[in-house]
Length: 85
Image (cartoon, rainbow, N blue to C red):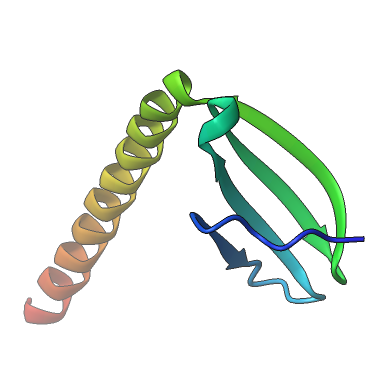
């Protein structure tokens, strides 16, 4: 049976649908963040991340996001440049 999320946590829906989601729950009492994969309200897997590793995960996600924005910006600039000429 699924437990409710702790007060600090969140749910992210998978764009593929099919009731897929990622749940993130903070467990300060255990110095952990738990990432769990769900499908049709059934937990299909978990990963426990130590609190001291969270900054590295955030930095990795931030770096990937920055790179993605830079690539999108260059594509947009190229598309606008080709339309102006």
